[in-house]
Amino acid sequence: MSMVQPKSASQPYEKPRGGRLKSPAGKRDFKGQASTAMSPELLKMVAYCLAPIDEARARVLREFDPPADWEDFCRFCLERGVLNLVYAKLKRAGREEIIPPPLREKMSRFYMNIAIHNELKLKSVVPVSALFNKKGMDFLFIKGAGMLLAGDYCDFGERIASDVDVLVPESHRAEADRTLAELEEWTRSNPNETRPTVESKWLNKWGVLIELHSRLLDLNGIPAETPMNRLWNNAQEVHSNGAAALIPAREDRFIQSAIHFAAHHSFDLAFMLICIADLAHIAGKPGKTLDWEAIHRRLQQERMLEHGGDGSGERPAGIRTDQAGDGIYELTRARALKMGGVPDSAAVLATFGK
Image 1: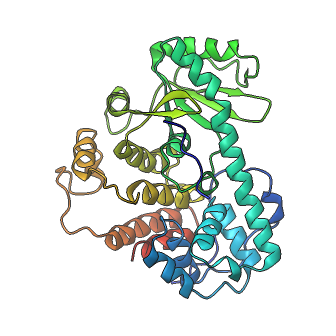
Image 2: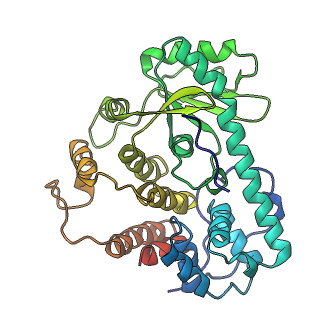
């Protein structure tokens, strides 16, 4: 099998907390910072662009009025890492013509740059995969790289991925570092870092960054070995340009995406929309249904359900997408208010899926 190929109530603006998202060339086309409030209609348009486009969603997108200030709208989406995705979905819904021609060209270029960079990233790690396989080492492509290899998104231009995250067992960590050192094109960018809990970083001449992880976070009193064993036991094999690699199972990609946003990025608003898009694309893959019972069991075993109910581990009854969205909106709104701001992007969740 070959690698999955690309297919042809208004809240005042509050800049997302956290560091700026890395992105390829093209970001400089959108200078400045968004300054106007996003209307509920525009937030709803963004929300509809975060999920796979079917005919029903395409029909809704075709009914939206275009934003009054496209430059401001583009900067709003860019700062949240979804400008490329919004462009791709508008194009797929047949709404590309509503974008003013000069901005349409910039958005298209930005989207294509991401597609090219993502394909370059995956091709750059083919020799690494081949050598790891030759040495009999276990390795797992996680996060954005795993989703791209799985084909969760329609094409490589829809998902920003700043690096390639690879998980290896702790027993293989030293050998993995030595193996990368054998490849002339890769250079260790943090050579003085020796702590096993911190990833080693490897950079090539094309600017592709590999982050080599050997541990996950200990969460809820559950040792990191538990989710790591889950990832390894359920892993699925894919082939990228002739080299075999493992990625997390679909249910585990869904769980990992949620945990990555909640635990690793502490509900950082700069990553919120990317996380929602990840969950929507993993769960909404045409023709495939997530095994929700398996997800429930895994979350229960790792004490994740205790954060969504009364502590009994029982699944709440009657939860719909809009109810979950309203609940997450209130949670993030309350958290942001403590930080001194109101999260306009959190309002997307109030309309997502309705």
